[in-house]
Image (cartoon, rainbow, N blue to C red; front, side, top):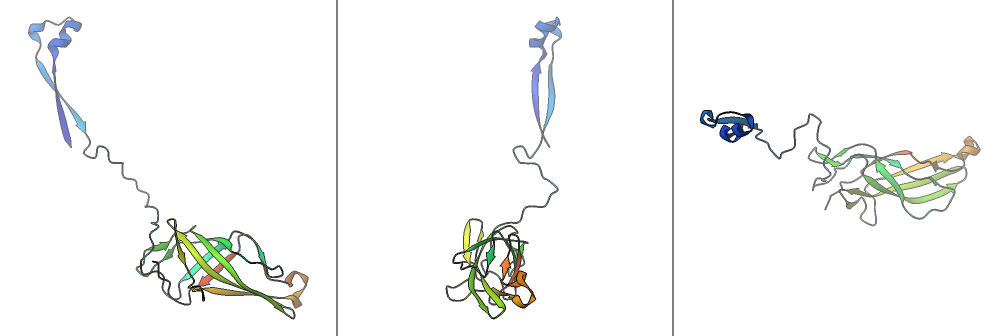
Length: 181
């Protein structure tokens, strides 16, 4: 630790304390100054996950679990995107967190049809946003991850269509590597 020495002349104080000026002697006082002045103190809590995707991206087979933030039903025509968020941290090729949990994701309904009693809906993983940057999971023609949901209307009226509610978890598995650019 560094210390700062201050020299006080007691003579100046003697006028106010009734001391005789002839007895006044200079004195030194040491004050401790921390060496990390201006540096925030260290905490024991682990650092927040960084939002910097690995430049090499995600390898084939990576699981990307998301939670839907809207409702979709195969019996209603739908064109557009479904908002979602990642459910857990997703690690990149180097083992670091590439996509932090809670990152915004866009899921796109690709097909929706009904053949006899069987309803089917295909969803594609479209894009993720990490640190305010958008990274596609599609090349425009094919998705890196897609999934099909089916429902059998033969099981009763509650099964007449594929219905995904708010908060539904979808586990997408990458069919090909995804590079972050």
